[in-house]
Image 1: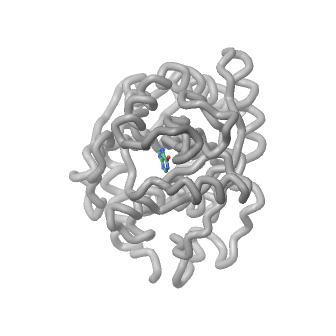
Image 2 (image 1 turned 90 degrees about the vertical axis):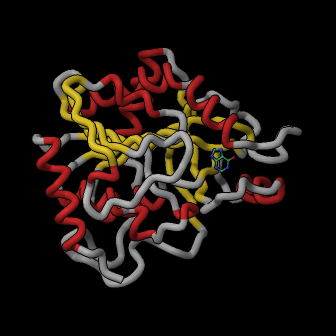
Length: 276
Ligand code: HPA
């Protein structure tokens, strides 16, 4: 299937008319990380339900709205919530907001998420800069006819999490004395958390963390040449690493507990990145 440009244009034009200036950054906030949006000045809030053709957010802990505003005079658009494959949406619907951002010509993307650790050296509360990802799930948001206006049929994936921005983010973490791990994110479609054997396999395959989001959006952003940074908040140890069950409540709470350092480092990164 080809992306439905008519719907994308209508939704993007609606967003553009509501928020005014085209933001320099878009930030997608994962589970339990929503309060970053409160740091924006001169906020305009738009519920996803108001935007034509936007899917509806069904996940507890996701507000389901856009918040636009400025951070030290830099225009930023925050998505409080996103769409996941496990909600029953097609990949095309999962990346619909991204297509709107691309149509509006937003140049930079920050993706955040809650993730489980598959690495015994990681702990809940750790922040992980995403270095790369692994997706073995067969579906892709780029499957089907390609729309050349967004990017090429066969797209390079050698630097989806822009190296230059990772260097900058690492530096920001050091300056603020906020430790940042750097690792590989493994995409699972969920909604079940993993079995202990899956966690073991994911670790052997070379990942450090696992989650149910982010990768579809990053594929579409990278396809279209956006600069991307990804930050995971480790909310739990993957099944079987410790003798404990994994649950959504715990994921939300651990996300909230790490939020202060998460917000601090994100603000610094946007300040530095906007000056590039
Ligand atoms: N697995 C998959 N997704 C997640 C996890 C997990 O352990 N924690 C938060 N999101």
